[in-house]
Structures are given as structure tokens and as C-alpha cells.
Amino acid sequence: MIGNSHCGAFAGLGRCATLLVILAPVVGGTTTVEEDMVWTGGLRSAYFGDRAITQSDDLIVLDIPDRAEDAAIVPISITAQIPQTDEHYIQTIYVFIDKNPGPLAGTFRFTPKSGRADLAFRVRVNAYTPIRAIAETNDGKLYMSRRFIKATGGCSAPAGSDLDAAMARLGKIKLRTNGVLQLAEPAQAQLMISHPNLNGLQMNQVTQLYAPAHFVRHVKVSFNGEEVFSAETGFGISENPSFRFFFVPDSEGELAAEITDTKGLRFSQTLQVAPTAALGLVSEDM
Amino acid sequence: MLQLSCGFFALSCGSGQLPAQASCSPSAEVVQVAAGVYVRPGHAAVVFEADEIANIGFVVGDRCVAVVDTGGSLAEGRALDCAIRDVTDLPVCYVINTHVHPDHLLGNLAFKRPGVEFLGDAKLPRALALRGDVYLERASAYESRALDVSIFVFPDRTVTGTVQLDIGDRILTVRAHKSAHTDHDISVVDEKTRIAFLGDLLFLEHIPVIDGSINGWIDELEAMSGESFVYVVPGHGPTSASWPAAAGPTVRYLADLRQNVRAWIGSGGDLASAQDNIGHGRIADWRLSERYHRRNVGAAYAELEWED
Image (tube, rainbow over the protein chains, first blue to last red):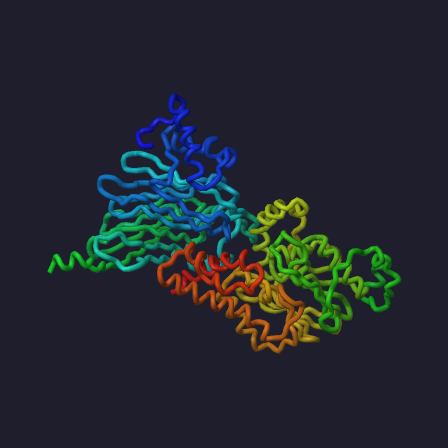
């Protein structure tokens, strides 16, 4: 697929059509033209123009449930199939939920310091819809992993139902690492922000007005001052956003998260990390 | 004129004066669980996939009748109304909604008439406003169930704390609970018989469904275990059960789930893996576990991950 960079109106068309037919069964079961109408009917061109997008699970794999247990908190995970190196890495992942009121759920950026461009978070899903993750590599190539989900009504319902508890906790942040931290090995970090992430579709019963949208807009995480993960998020992200991503603890240091919401409120949190030396390195040092 | 003369002196109104009785059909089948206390049994099923899912009921006083939940459709509400007319000529004066879920509340419209006051928790209107559109959309997926917004009847009076209703030599205690099954649960105790309608604070047979707070729910059931109820009416399960033994299965399910989800969060496991792994071997005794257990894991996870 690499090098087939002009799947467009010209000679490539025939090849692309063939390609899609071959790939469709591999990347998430049956797909129909109807399911993809939002995408093909304008969403794709609005964001990517006529750039080539390879539909394949070779670079990233999107994992979502077939049917949402709760449409207001649908877990999404994306697993990169390549490591992040200085020469070749995934720099951006876009996640689209075609039939949501705001289809672009988020734009997530990674660096070689991320170690892995893996990502997990939760979204609201409003209707039966394709969900697609599109990765852009540092050499400008686009790869798409696509799935389909059965879910209804996630955008107007509050997630945890206990809205008051969520509001009382606004701005509380949890930042932690998961698993044993080994020096210079990619490690998973988790950032949670207590925030109602109101999307403007939820009615305030007291005022009889729709609560104005108020959601987390930017997230940036750095390790010892160097960015490892950042995100620009829309209101498709569930209440109390939670992100799992990777970074490389190549020394002791500080993981720092900064969050800004649509009202300009800023929240931050830091975490001191002390990776243990990998066994091989210990013996070399000694 | 007829109504005016019957209203508050209903004891003097013979059933023969109410031609509506003959034409009111079909009547829901109800079970009398104590003198003046009736329950229309529900049968475990997913909302909108069947009729008569929840246990709903009514209590007959000397003056009037209080309805506790109205069922999952206008037809169910009407059938309950007919069942009331089969046992008394007294008018319905209160409809108490235990919470927002459609299998309990969508029969309200059958009772919307002068003289009937609707009661619900102070947070019920918000819950109904937030979810109404979703319920309409879900209902529309079933051909025979298409609804419009007029089906929703909001409370005339909201409850915080407790309220006592006198339906004629019979006091009902209506109590608002802290966030448990939902964030707006109501229970109703008939003080004459000490029978408690617990709504979906209590499940038997049908797997409990968390739509409020797992911690709050366990706390509420444990706090209520000292109550001297003669019988309780669960929102789902048999029409009556003894207390506090009946709370056991719900509390055990929730406590077990909480313990497992806390451990999963503590070990760094994510939401999706928690749903894939927790508790699937031990829940077979519950009906509808295949439809609601994973959802419960998700709801518990989203709450418990914020514990310190």
C-alpha cells in the first residue's frame, strides 16, 4: 500500500476500489456503503481533502465493543503496531464517530518520547455508527482502522447519572502510572480529570435551557519538560475524561499534565516517577 | 354531578353507579399481598422488549387510592387503572413514581386527570428531561411502541426527605433516598401494614442494575436493614418478600462487584478489560445478567475509579 499515495479520481481509482473490497472483511466485518455515507459524503474530504488513506490494521488497531453497554461511556482503545522511534513514528491519531453531533472526538499527538502511540479513552456514541481511528506518521502517511458500533443516545444522557457528585468534584485530577516502571522502557500512564464535559445537548431542568457546552479542550502531558502526549478533544469524550497513553521514563523525573477547558479553566497535576533500572543495565553499570 | 357527589364521600357510592367499571378492560391481574395492598407482578425482561416488566401496585385507603408506579406503557397504566376499579370505587388521588425508568413510569398518562397528584423525587424531573428523548428513540426501534413526548408526565410535587400522605385512615410514608439504583429513588411504606414498596432499590431474580451509585446503593440497603417491614415489594422479582432477608442477594451482588472492580482498578486494569473479566462465572443465577452485568461493571468502574 505504501507508495500508492494517489487513490483519487485518476488511474488509481480502480486499484483503490479493489483494495477496499479485499480489505473490508479484514478490518471489522461487513461494511456497507450506507454505513459510510457520512464519511464519504463530506467528513473525509473536510478533514483530509484528497489525501490517500490506507484502510488497514497494519499500523494501528482500533478496539471497541460491538454493542455499547452504556452509550455514554464506550471504551475505545488503539494499539500501535510499530514502536515510536526518532526516525519513524506516529505523530497524530484522529478519532471520528461519524454520526455524533461533533464527529471528531479528538486529535491525539505523540512523539518519539511516547515510546508507544497506544491510547485508551471513553466516548459518547449517539447512534449506530462507524468509529474510525486515523493515524498519521511523521512522513505524512495516513492509515485508518475502522469499526462499527451499535449504540444509542449517549450524547444527551449523563454518564454516571450522579451529576451532582460529578460537579462537586470538578477539576480533580488523578495522574498515575500502571505497572512496573523500567528505565527507558515505554510505560503506561493514566490521566483522569473530573469534569462533566457538558456537550450542550443536556437540558438543565431548573432553567429549562440546554446547559451550555463546557468540556475539556486541551490536554498536554510532558516528562521532564518534553511533550509525550497531547490531545485536542471535543464533546464526544465522556464525562470525567480518562486517557491512557505511554511515555518513556529515561531517568527519574516529573510527569506533568496540563488541562484547559472551553471556559478557559486550567487544571494541572504532576507526578514524580523513579523508574527501576532494567536488569541488563544494572549489570552494565556495575 | 355524579363525580362531585361521590368524590370525598365515596363510601356512599355503590359500584352500580359507575358504568365505567363494566367498560374498563382489560384489567391487569393483580395480587393482594395484604388488606388493601395490591401488586401487579412483573416479569424479567429488557425495557421495551416486553410488557409488564416491573412490579407495580396500589394501596387502597378509606378516602382514595395511591398508585406506586404505573408500568411500561399507556396500556399498562390503563390496565392497572381498571384493576383498581375492579377492587374499589374510590378515586385515585396519588401516583408515586419510584424513579425514571420506562418500565415503571410510562403508564403515568393513564392517570393524568383532575384529582390525581403525581409525586416523585426532587431529581426526577431532571432525570426525565435528560433521558426523555433517548427513551422516545429507543421505543421507536420497536414498531408497536412508538411514542411521542406527551407520554411523559412530570411530578406535580417533588419529595426531599420524607412526606406522609393520608389516603383515609391509612398513612403512606414516601421517602427520597440518596443516590442508589438511580440518583432519585423513592420508597413507599404503608404504615398500616408495614409493607414497603422499594421500587428498584431491591431486585430479586432479575439482576440488579446500577444507574446511580454502587456505594450509595449498598449504604442505603444496609441502613434500611433495621427497618421492621412486614413484607417488601421489590421492583423486580416476586410480589412480596420478607425483610431484611430479601436484601441479601442485591447487597451481595453489589458488594462482590465493588470488591472486584476496586481490585481491578487498583491493579491498573482498564474499563474494557474489567467488563471482559469481572464476575462472569458467578452471575448465572440472575436473570438478564447477559444484558446488564457488563454495564454494571462499567458503571461501578466509572464511580469507583474516583475513590481515593
